[in-house]
Length: 324
Image (cartoon, rainbow, N blue to C red; front, side, top):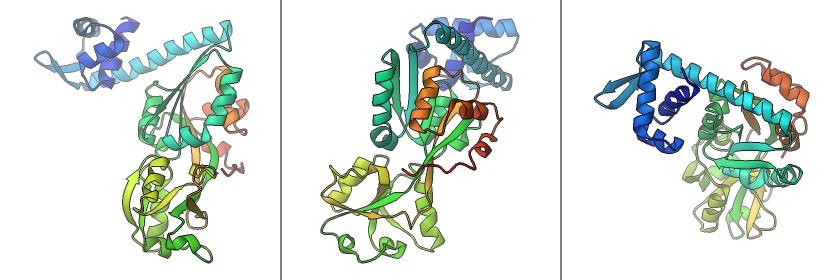
């Protein structure tokens, strides 16, 4: 049994049994991968993949267990490399962050700027996607940290570290009727207008829907997007009233819009960082976490990583998280 063979079956499974796509991603040949998988199956005496002719059709029950264990072995092998690198040069390496547009555009820039100045030899990679996609990236070892508000809890192999709480702003053009509203905005008033907001599953959208439902109201959502800047674009076009994260309002760039406080209308949301359980933490990774959320000290992070599935949250229950 070779480490390379385990990588092949892991990657073939990750690429939905597409051997050609797997070969391209690993810069090797399709026949070479097929041969090594056959050799591994012969050695183990079981089929990992069921076949129809030359095509893989599904993962067998035994194969699924083997693929899962292969993933664990590959992650441990990667941890061995990380341990060696940490001792040989603690300020050199890589950090892959998977996050949503809102975090990448508004929350992360000052943190990234400070981090790269201190660690110029750490290659930083940022990947964007839906909350579910970025959680999966970390779960499968394609990224080190997932930063999002929604969906991380769907992956039980991730340790979730709460970072900060935030709420929403309502955005309208200056000539909109709500722009001159006297007194606090109400959900009933919002329900009277077409709304432009986040796609369900993005950036605290569930709290928004829950607030309307609790009042027996049906919001008239005419357009959804995963990008706050896209939402603002369509608010400017007059398509509807925008509801975005408070952090997504730029006082310098959004001078043509009126921002109304929405924090009394919706429950606050919590942005979290997800880390795959068993990840070897480099020194600069701890530093990044503490820069992003000062309460995420090395000791607290280590305690959460070893707390056991779904017990890490209790370590932070007494903390008064900052409001963004």
